[in-house]
Length: 164
Image 1 (cartoon, rainbow, N blue to C red):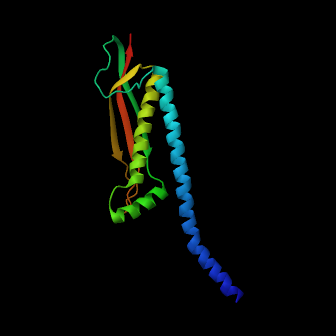
Image 2 (image 1 turned 90 degrees about the vertical axis):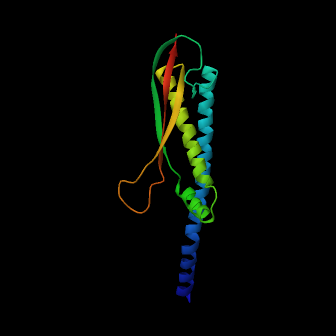
Image 3 (image 1 turned 45 degrees about the vertical axis):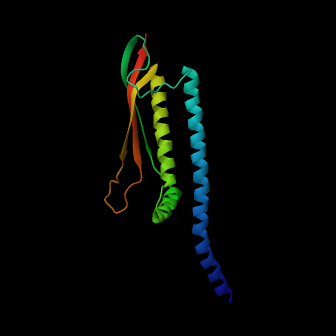
């Protein structure tokens, strides 16, 4: 009787443990994403306060001022969903519609790439970056298997300008 009870408890634990792990992963992953977004917003505000405006522009030229120097500014990063986001997105894909978690990851990655571009320009001493572009590429695993990589590289670049 005691062995049967122990087996029942272990079987129940075998069912509940994975469910609890998935829930915990979702809670922790969500908290980490919110923290990353908050830190990113703070970093963006620091640059905007320092220069009084956003230093990035997709225009070819923004000011009618004398330019003393130009150069290329680049920043990149690799982003990908965590296991919780992949799990929920696989379930959502069964029913169709927008995969919200993937949208969130890509939006956060896009904002982070642009912020890294701002910081690279600030470090190099550029007053502003014009003609900003953002390129993406899907990363594939080194080993060939059926499961493709969910990671994506975001590469931001533009022309740094130093005014006279």
